[in-house]
Length: 248
Image (cartoon, rainbow, N blue to C red; front, side, top):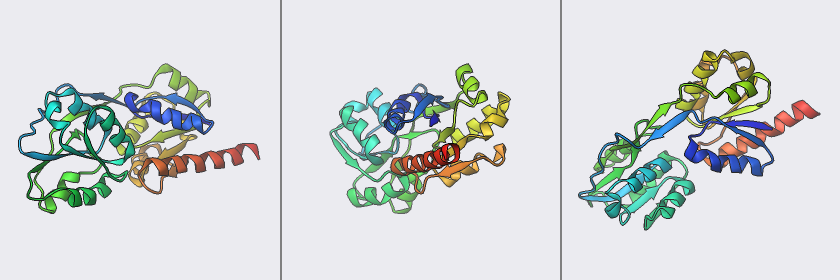
């Protein structure tokens, strides 16, 4: 099966490898550009622990002068991917939490002292889930500087447009409402709505699916939970159905 992967460039390669390991072909079409320029300064004074709900948050601190101090603080990371990159970049005390930011809140509440100092969330400018709000409701003081920014790409590449138009892509993978909205806009801008609507839209969550409403009715497969294992399970299920529909 032929998949279009829309993850940002820095993370697309790993996802591509997962799919190719399952025997699929992959075209990359990042829909977001990630920038660490113009980010908020990171001040770790009186911070007892760090929270990372994305790999880019970890990458941002590793680029900042505050990394010399920050790498010695406990870092509570969402999922194995974020935890792994934190360790590879030199963070010495990494606590690997569940694969969703919502579930990470309970781990943080158990792991750190509510009276022990501030928590600092290494946040992007767009939040899929606001861990700071939940932690503040539990009595924690949470700092949330924007340490990286995301910007939508302005166009799909000519190669991607050509492959979609020719029916050379079978499915597109969308992992956030933001990228789903960008996708819906770009296929209309490029005039490829009819062939794009034939693709299976594999979505990380119901919220991602809802962001596709401007496209009208499209084939959809939604992960049962918003994490890597479940999105891969949704991909496997979509591929099995596609194979039955096309070869049986």
